[in-house]
Image (tube, rainbow, N blue to C red; front, side):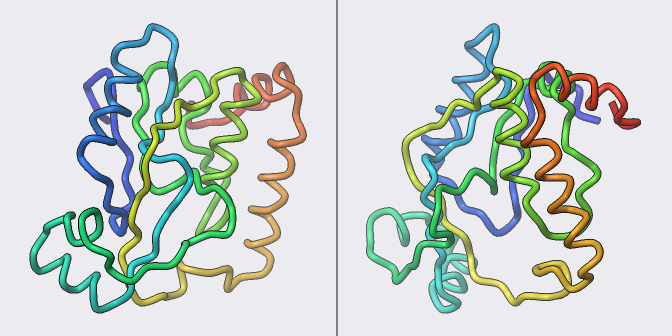
Length: 176
């Protein structure tokens, strides 16, 4: 529903330094071909409950960037989710968000792989992001095993396709 050329998609529990957001925005805005930019280079720091609460009260990112608040790596691999900037029209041609993912799952990795298969590798901006602590509920894990299997099958299906196969598959998506 955005009526701008670019849009940012951000998880509500992710904090990104402003300079990295601006660099991601500029990478897409200044280009005639870029589809997406991710404002960090794969490191997502998980912030504990205490420091997440302090941040929520103060709203000062220096708690993470200038001081050494306790943190752990959120993933043991390069993360590609949490925040991205897209050129809306170019992203639409790449399938938007894959709505065959319901609930929690590998949608971030699928999005990145899909764009790479289509020859539209996301621009990666140097830097890190911060994941705020929050309680975990039903949407934070795969409670429904049939749904979890379906999302993993969708991920594998997309990642196994050649570019022309993927374009044909995307053309069948009713939300395009």
